[in-house]
Length: 431
Image 1 (cartoon, helix red, strand yellow):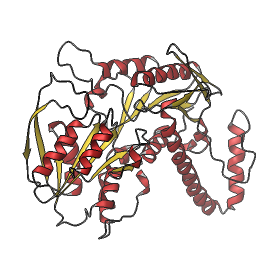
Image 2 (image 1 turned 45 degrees about the vertical axis):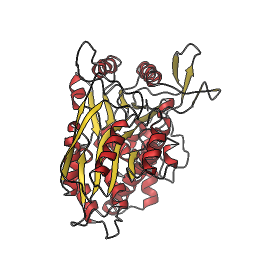
Image 3 (image 1 turned 180 degrees about the horizontal axis):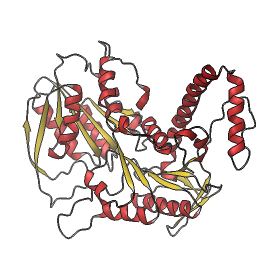
Image 4 (image 1 turned 90 degrees about the horizontal axis):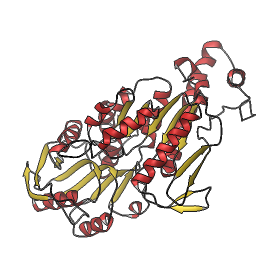
């Protein structure tokens, strides 16, 4: 049974996290936030109940533990009845990778009747342990996708009550529009998920809202990293200064709405880069590009230019845009990407562009696992695991996501809290 509003604490025992090999790093970070959320909510509830019923805190905790033991099918793993018990959340599983490329997922504990959240990072291209740590492999997007499909099937057959996919990067999201004799792969995958019994999907800054229209029964919750990005931006720029020479730049027409959000939220002017492309050219690395002409609508001369986009692959388009803005007199160029893939030799080419002064900083999220990027002076990583934890907690307890999906009020409060040096007080609602 899913935890309802009246079962918010005992119901947390029915929340289960199952991490595919690629998504384990992010899942572990989210679980830490979930534990914090659980304890924080329970402490607040206990404080209110002790005052209302004139009870001692220790006695109330003992009673809550007794109630949880009473309604559960077996006794709780933690025998300490005097302390708040934190659910484990993470499900034990065995992932086997066969030499012919097949995957198998075995769930090593009972998940019958639970609300299972399956984590996968399809853009994790670092060596991962499989076969109980005996082997390490680097998996492609398609490998990760098949691993996730096999895991969904295992969860379904294990009797889960509800299945949610947590995929910060929605696979094949760029294949959402027909331009000729080609398939709608993003939509096709959505149908696969529904056939396998997926109830909902949580993702981050999905490439196109059109993908949401391809689902018949499953729901898709599209989270945004704007708060986390602005939080990092306030540490390097004084956004609270109304006289600051700061301009938001949409890197192309497809990113206008995203950058309009930053422009209205930060109360800064909006400019746009207009590009003409030759779509017959398929880029292989960041040095290649299909852009044949580029123009600027707006003024960046002597100003700090900030660009925001949903994803960065080879990075060629962003590199050219940032170099172009510097040529137009931008004092400083800062970019933000929700999904920093940095495929191919992108990191090396960004190193070269940074040395040439084409940009100042790149802000990206930890929704895509990276090790090399974190060592770079020009890269800033912002943590969105707390955002996902809040979404999971609210969905599990049938609560509204409105405050997470429309975060303009939180951003405004954060900007008001900024001091003249650009420091700010953190709002823990989207920590």
